[in-house]
Length: 198
Image (cartoon, rainbow, N blue to C red):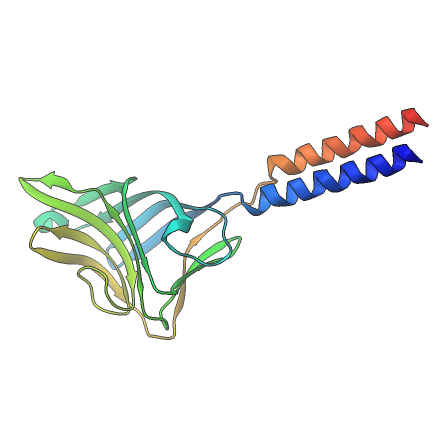
């Protein structure tokens, strides 16, 4: 009987550990946005929080911005893998498969590159969804552009109404976590061990 009780305790411990590990697992969301004649593609990684997000929940991103009229009309592609995150207001929420922006709530979400020198001008490139307060674009819009010392320019943008909720990133495939495979193999091992003890 002691073996059965010990096994139940061990199983409960393993189950609780697995739940804790998967609850805090990072989630990588894929981005594929068309903004007027521009695009934003790549990924955003969160800390796995479900519900309303803040800046600290956005852990990493790797994005490519394209817009035909950036840099004074020249075709443009720019990668954003480092820089600043700005998330103001209760505007971005996460599910296990989607990131959503709520245009009925005041605030903005912006990912910006580190500043770079373009033809002697210090410039930073950004992608923003906003109801108000973001750099360079109209309210209730999603836009990509560049910020230069002394001013901001939003080169491509799409406008929304104040009732829209936009899904701007999705998880295309949800793999079975490694912890789940470990848990399953552990259970099989424990069952075999218990049978041998009998």
